[in-house]
Image (cartoon, rainbow, N blue to C red; front, side, top):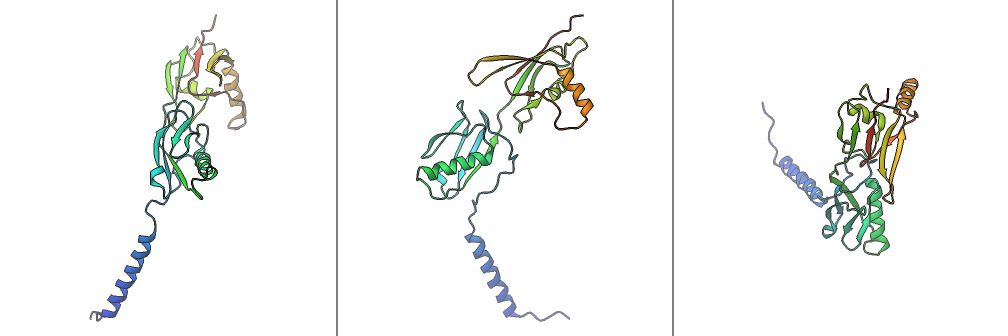
Length: 214
């Protein structure tokens, strides 16, 4: 036998549902959330970012980081964010709005819409010379890993005199020589020791592996 339906129970359920929906309606739909991205990633030139200021829709922008490492923000103008993590950039924008007395307690969220393409060029005596694109979330790569990605050294390579060409902050060309053989053998001796000696390769570097003179 089925239980008798009670109108009062139905009315109570409707009242409860209405109250719940009322509370939900009061929660802002655009409440900023933490970006589900690598929080250790540092912004670089050509990253496309979306900046949202909670409750200030007119201040939202979507721009690429320019050649000076900056984006242009409403009321603030250009603000440099290259080299910062997402949270550092969010905090810098928040502090700028407060410092300039535009907003009292801004809540800024930054999301990376599109990572810039970061690559290096590898020439000379390796298995697959040519450009190597970095994983989008990384700004550097160990040279041993890089050599592995291009198929390792060829039998005729002079792996103890690998040349790395890069530009310093003033735009001057700097050439370094790295004994990659020593780094590889040192890594083997130390196993998985994270403190082993390394040499970091950065986007824009040019790597040349010369031929061994027999």
